[in-house]
Length: 291
Ligand code: NAP
Image (cartoon, rainbow, N blue to C red; front, side):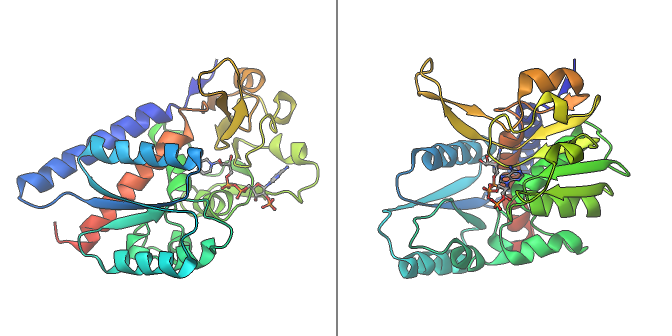
């Protein structure tokens, strides 16, 4: 059976390390890092994610500032709040929870965040910093994937990493990180890729970040591969109180027996993304204060 890449456990380890650092700061009489979260509208999934982030802040001793706006807020007003947070010295980092209502440009809002405070690592500057030697803040989910592999001593150097899904937030920055930091040979597949299985079958490390349950089936995975499932889709499940369960892109039951390592969904990449957010907030704090 494969080794489970237990993101929940590793995220717990990272949180303990951050808590210890926060305690040191408090012992020196300094304030704790402060993360602000902007959420627009009443999307249930978004509020669940935000509640998870708030709980994580509390668990490590961070302060947090929640700003909830109605879905009717104008783009100009939201931009004004972003500008205020950029200038607010009591806020070390902030995120704007996605998705945003259609009348608001995600790119415009994201790019307005000062890169030193962009703790999701979404801005073009932080995306580009993957290839510089002066990285401060890393795109959160890709960094979480890399850190999960590092902490399980999964080698990436000279291995063939195939990433399925080429989004600006996950697949594309992860491809750069795998190449730059991981020294892997990378194949980046997207929706125009022909014969996806041909590529995935050659992967030593296969990462799927699409959001399509059961996209990756047993026949698409090489014996002994490392499989990381970033996909998170709510699928109806009437047997649950919530009425849904979370599904990854990988058909876990059939794929897992072929793998050397595999992430579960939930409990794999999701908790690592939150741990990355906390780590980025701590880095943002430390870069703005001489702590
Ligand atoms: P996204 O922006 O929708 O990107 C999905 C990517 O997959 C796009 O590049 C898309 O191409 C591509 N794609 C679509 N169908 C494909 C196919 N059949 N074969 C190969 N590529 C295909 O989503 P995202 O933000 O990257 O997120 C992807 C998944 O990861 C979602 O399920 C999301 O919920 C999950 N996620 C999880 C975490 C976590 O912490 N666990 C964090 C972030 C995201 P086009 O753009 O051309 O359609």
